[in-house]
Length: 109
Length: 336
Image 1 (cartoon, each protein chain N blue to C red):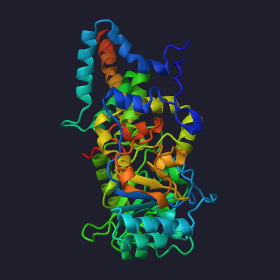
Image 2: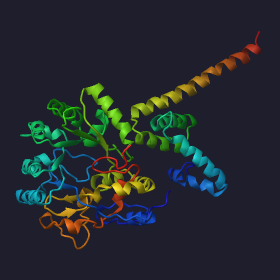
Image 3: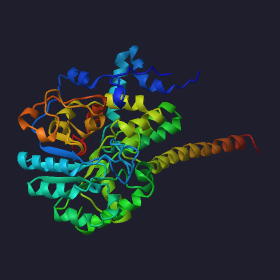
Image 4: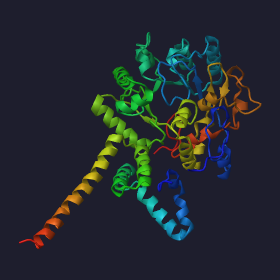
């Protein structure tokens, strides 16, 4: 058995069986975040796709790939968003090299 | 594994939906009945110079089902007698039918606004090079499919080389005034998703098309219509082949928008096939889903009184027209 099942995405609502009040609050907030605002739905979908990759959540990658297509993005634009997430992850990793440098310097003569 | 969907109306190539369309309407206190017929949509047959992957007609170069001159005469007689405000001519590539120009000329002479579903590339078939001038002469509204403003997506759906040819055809249409703001000659494009997903908001993607087509290729058009891919015929085959049917149908059902029902095209449209038989829409025609019992079945027996307020025949594919912003031959039902 795989840990991730595609159909689980459609079962998300089952989380609401316990503490439905909290789930309803989450869903209302989540839906409101998707709406057109100062950012368009398309921009938000691309942000969602990038974050999904940074989190490496297969459900979110699946859902936001569809959202990107359904808000008019193409694979070139989506790939740029994924590169942004990757670049941030890479940069975040690399800058922690200074922590290592600091740690080394602290114990070095 | 996910639980399989119950099978509803699975015969005759119908998609499998988790709930019946009429049942869904009833749950919202709705029923689907026609109003007055404003558009006579004439499908002159399945012959086409292209064989697009999403085509609900299964049209292609080898299809032989095309309208006879006798049937075309019956349609013109009905247009003259009943004064349909709009005659919408489709196919296949309708221009390949020998009666096409007769239908256009006589419908215009009878006072109808004429729309032609023109696939752009047919302009490069023998004896079709003068189509831009013919359209202009008869003030035809041209509606053309271009699923995306990039070559890869367009050719993936409509065939290798279609994008480049389509742009050249648009240049020729622009050249006689089509798609230019002040000309009054209307060239509208149609966006179809190039896969198993819903179309984006019409206004948003229209702005992209206008900007990108002008900047990249120097061509222009009037409006962009977004049309949802209907889960029938060739697109349904694609869904089944790729394991996408269940997911796509669930998406359509979950996106059911009760507010789109009032504006559905079947409420003001009557579809006639290449043999003269009548249907509630072009999709029902392709599924051979008959109009309500007791009504005349052919254009030669059409009676506007009997057809007004008729119940519309529905099946699972109707969820395609009610999903999200809704879908019709004139784009999204809910205009933004």
